[in-house]
Length: 398
Image 1 (cartoon, helix red, strand yellow):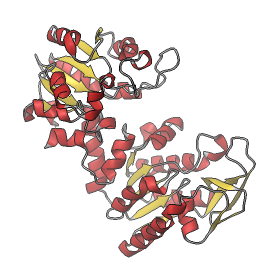
Image 2 (cartoon, rainbow, N blue to C red; image 1 turned 120 degrees about the vertical axis):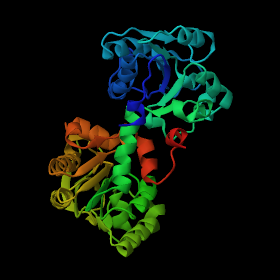
Image 3 (spheres, one colour; image 1 turned 180 degrees about the vertical axis):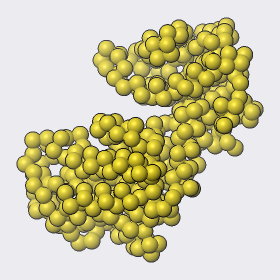
Image 4 (cartoon, rainbow, N blue to C red; image 1 turned 30 degrees about the horizontal axis):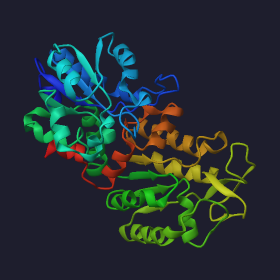
């Protein structure tokens, strides 16, 4: 059992940092409530124990203090629904008189949602005085916002110093994220396949370097693959290429060879004459794409090769799509990878999907419940796999 699950919150006010940074439409309706749903088990456990809950979160990136479109009041009714009709109280500030009075009067079984933390610049600056004011609202602090764990903000890290060690907890979301990441980083069964996609090599250099110490195989797809082909002297037409990263790509290939890590690049690509949903398409070897054409997805040969390698893997980390999966013509590669990861999982592999686009892909194609774990934190998961210490995790464990 975990420290959180073992603890009884009876009679305690739990101040929980959640990640309710959810998308809203023009009428302030929530268009994707996955982040809210993810934290429900944490909230419900505390309420069931006989504790009360004070929720704090950011929403969007308000530039100049309080802004209507970034107010957390838009989430109150839906949160109440998700909690089975529990009335959610709302404080129109996250510190100050209204927050203090409402939290002080909170009874066991009640829930209070504070206004957007980022209406104060002190939140992102990690201001100690601001963190201390927040800390006075609760008896215990629970960090359940993995999506912000890589930020040393007031509510995600600095606040910890105002609670004794036995009053600081990971919520169930954070526990699940850390456990899944540790499984991949430190307990991976071989063969260990890392699937790295996306547009830029520069975004993924550190994660690839760290994985060279752990993975047996690394698939490189998406736009970043063409920088590797260019570095090897290939013709990539108008495909995405980071000219200032050609030497980096070469170095990564050399390091992988020295460590015995197999790098898999897509042998062929689906190419297009423009970056558009209605583009003319063809296929070509990935290292010989005609001028005026660009690679926007992995080709059929690459799909077959990659899927075979994935299915023989025992541990799988997937971060980044294989192509421009938002356009139907260029989603086959990413969808095939999602299918292969699900099939490998069914055969007993442990699979972790992390990063906004990969998560969007498994959700879009209906595979979210067919992999071992889907991470809620894009940037946080990336930094974790780069080997960095995340402030939001250190605040609870150190």
